[in-house]
Image 1 (tube, one colour):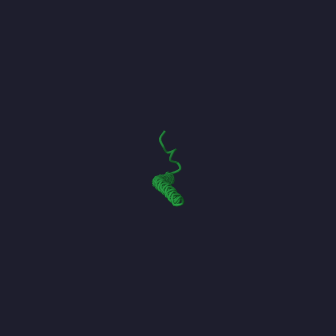
Image 2: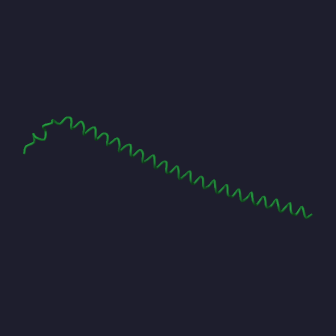
Length: 84
């Protein structure tokens, strides 16, 4: 009878350990989901910033092209032809 009592105690100890492991795994899964959501948020923000930088780059390139075209159209004697 003593062996049966110890066997039951061992099984309950194993069940308690398994429950502890199960709880830790669930906590790790929740933590992983939170990290994934945070990463996804950062990726969305990064993509938005990247798009904004591309728009700024395109606008700056267009301004530069316009400037070059305008300077090519102005005659070289333009400043001296202004009334003083």
